[in-house]
Length: 68
Image 1 (tube, rainbow, N blue to C red):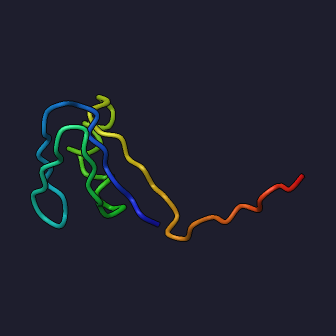
Image 2: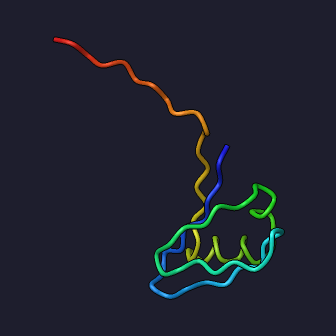
């Protein structure tokens, strides 16, 4: 699974993740580890609506095409 954090604001947000300090640009996204979602700073910013966590499967889902 791939996890990203999306900044919902038009101002950059500085995050202190397990991998180091990361700046998420205005309305930008950064990849993160699943464990980073449990960090106090990340949880607080998600609750406030500043960040939104997105988790997606690494495998693309194939959908059959309808004919007719």
